[in-house]
Image (cartoon, rainbow, N blue to C red; front, side, top):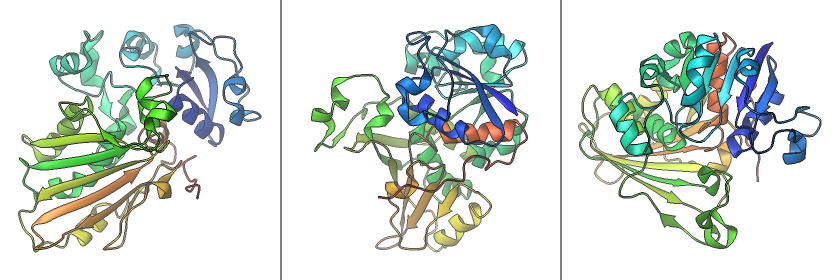
Length: 343
């Protein structure tokens, strides 16, 4: 069995990790931490885990965590980087679901996250955990930066087109919508029921922290600068995310359906839908699946890609489990074979 520690287990992604790992055939959670809830039984906070998780939250303890084979950080930005160096030195593998190790450029990270990075020397060691691009590197990694939810949906939608050099890289548009769970479990006015229900709004148009992450991924693939307009929106649902992507095509004669189907033919968690389809967020709820549809409307000079994921699973916890499977030499799909819950 792979022994697991979870730092910061009281948020939505921590709860999703516990749910997924409780049904994993090769993982055993040994420790789950919470500074504010130490001593509380996990199933007292998350009754849905009653009978599946028999643990209490504890104070973070490096020695206890270092005894685990792998530790997940499901913590606010700026937390993981305080503990990661000591755990790495102890031989423990790390998956950070926060943003501490996603950006390679220290100055960019500090500008977007508004704090000094505690261990910039470790950024070069971190592998960006998008398996559809970095699978081989993830298998050898000791520190994986789990991608953000918007960056996952956007990158998977753009990837075949950017790899093939088929879109104008100076005019990419990502119009994205997310359920309110993407904002986390903390109480805040914009995600109160009375504020978010029966409402729809954009936010972060002047600049969102996921913008440099998306741009970094696309520029690695493209081998040069990418001009990207990224606008997120909050929609009145709990979980789910759609990225609607638009770009001018360099060659309107290419069969985009064939391109996408070929690129993702061997990917267990990317489903390219039949031509003319429009994916729905409910078809990926609670799963590690990304469903994609590609269109060429009107004169065929513009590519439109729709990419849907569950922001808490493929956008966070289940993608982290996928990375754990790769890092630990397990079947990549282990513990991730569930299907979406409908309705």
